[in-house]
Amino acid sequence: MNFFDAIKICFVKYTNFSDRASRSEFWLFSLFTFIVSVMLMVVDPAPFAPASVIFTLATIIPSTAVMVRRLHDINRSGWWYFIMFTMIGIIPFVYWLCKKGDEEDNRFGAQPLT
Image (cartoon, rainbow, N blue to C red; front, side):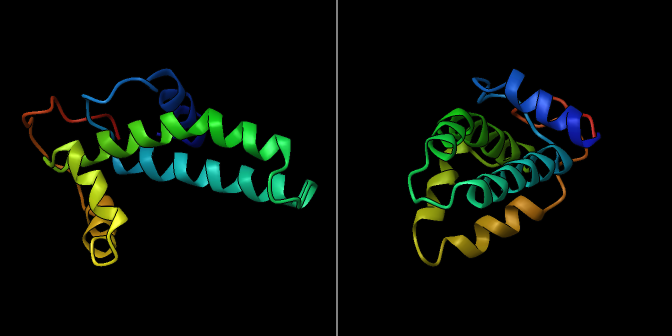
């Protein structure tokens, strides 16, 4: 999967919280949001710049959806997303996001395209 395919898939599947997302899809979309956020902060460094707020609002649901689908890829429920809001929960959460997904089909569907 290339960079632009990952971005396209994440915006097309922005309401899909039930499938699986590969590591490349998740990390390339995360890279996209990071790069655009940094560019917007350089252009307008104000804390609540209109462009930054609009971009954040436009990507918050797709980002959450791809994160839940990524958890599904390792056969974890999407509800594990909330563990990241605890101090100690960040460690296993980052590990799960980096972990290789299940090779075979799991309860959330077939293996995603890489």
